[in-house]
Image (cartoon, rainbow, N blue to C red; front, side, top):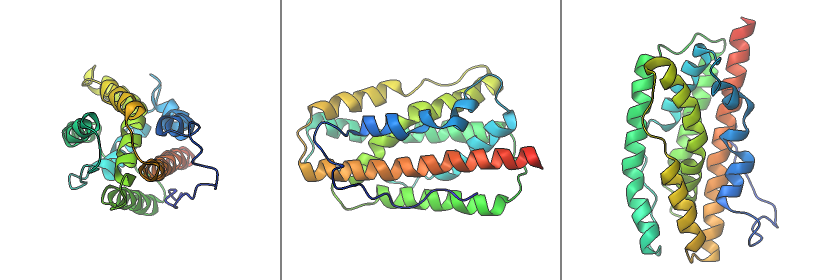
Length: 223
């Protein structure tokens, strides 16, 4: 029941121009492809499993100390998007905190201590990515998180509907904006590579998160 926190090393042909973008990485390896996450978006999803997901996401993404990405050589549109990251993150943390308070305690699960340690490790990996000095790495992680958060929010919104009947506005617009901005940005190949690396590392943590939550749900069902 260990989360996937390893560093992903891309193959030698990984950076072929026009074949790999952050959006394509998210589409292939993001939350929307995780079977457990898909189950949690359904009206029949277990509230116990939804509560577990909410608390896990709070552990991994609830840190207010994670700094926004920085990129000195970015164009004006990209800089404007970067400046909005902190505010969007604060809104999502507040939403998570409200859900965590109302969804109830973390469900009792065999092996909880080990899985909690794995979640803390994931948070630490993401904290290190956000603090990376490699130009573009932290931004790539932030972009991947923004794009993947649309699918994450489908899970959280399901929990909110079950608890409150509705949830706050979704993050589709913020995600769509960065896709359009990056499509027109003239970033250097080095920055592009660093952004893809940061995105891969972020997505690896989310894959590990959903695998862990699926294992926890199975452990509860067997108990």
